[in-house]
Image (cartoon, rainbow, N blue to C red; front, top):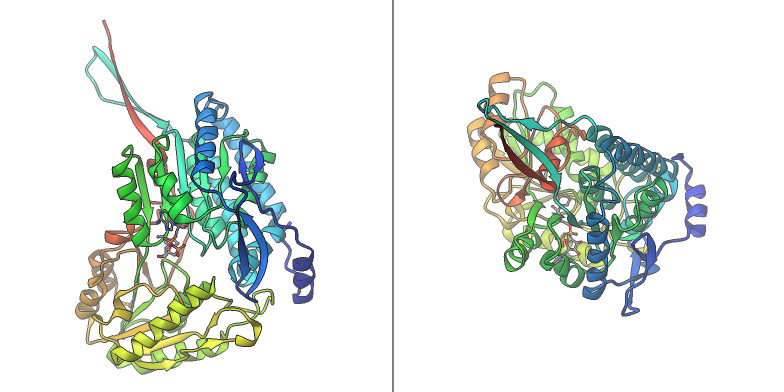
Length: 499
Ligand code: NAD
């Protein structure tokens, strides 16, 4: 079971943890045909954690073929919804039972604080799998309103073989948002985790197998994007591709679909979410604190990070003072220490990218109000201080481009109208928030913002019951809620003529 341990206990557990460095195909541990491996680095220390098998094109072919066989003989799709539900509930329970191991693996692999892995990533993953298991035997199909001489049914059927490609910021949760509905609906899947964070994917698949998901239904192929990910995207025998990651790579997946079999593509991509605080909000301190957490949580490696703070000028200084206080209390620490609130950036290259954006902000003339540097260099790991830029104009690169780190940019506005205009001046449309005590302003702004999720007087409030996804270049389709089934099912019309 998940259990909060102290720093020394986590360290001791980390030194004895055994990693699964293979993939999983047809229910069996799988190592790449080439024999190649690649090093996984613990971003908290810069030290190599393990050597992971490196699957590429030939391995993807084997995984897709296993998934196809499993789908065609209906070993999973042919089970009743109630049977699938029972297996998924067992799987969710196994995830909870292995909570400490999974949380620790996630933290060592991608640098997030152990307290978050344990209290957020593990329970959210288990709840997601259980929720879709619970849902699947409660969904009815439709009968169309025809004349007396016909019956027309509209039924949902699994799409077939689903390729899943996910990023490294929430490796288990991002995978679960796709595995839950795809598997509950009866599909077979091939999961390619991010090359930075593949360790928990194989464990999730092993636990699924233990729970009773038949071999071949859930396959895992660790490998790199331009080889394994691309081949999955181009594969003629993959019926749907569910992707979470950058907008740049999301666009490639649409091209892959066009160059191959026109597979269904679902995209959850990047964002530059506006977080508006207006002077008439009920509690400026609460709003500013939420704005700080909205960017610093998970080291800012959040697609929905409220990375553009849009604040009314009369409360600007007060808001910045509160955010600076939160930042001071959130200095980066060892992710294994349960007191750490801000961990390591996922890899050296990403840390350097974030630091590069900080120097771009300085060059553009923004004022560095908080942080701005690398931290804990002596650890060998990749840490960035919580950072705030003020005097930002919305046309600056730091206000338009996704930094994906703990870097907040603050744009000052005169009133609610200007706030809405600035909020929508972006190519993205994932999250957004507005803080105001005026119901009319709250409603007008939340209707006016072009984004998939709008938070009113809160930030990043979330549950599996509501859809998650973006407008514009933040993506296509939705994860979570019953709407997620749209990505993994086809609608069939059956028209029966009656005599
Ligand atoms: P990324 O796009 O670089 O990689 C995501 C996945 O795509 C990885 O598995 C990677 O191996 C694969 N990939 C990379 N290049 C590829 C290629 N040429 N062909 C096929 N596959 C390829 O993203 P990242 O750096 O891992 O994650 C950060 C991004 O993810 C951010 O932009 C963030 O906003 C986004 N994200 C979005 C959501 C959401 O729900 N909207 C959630 C989390 C993260």
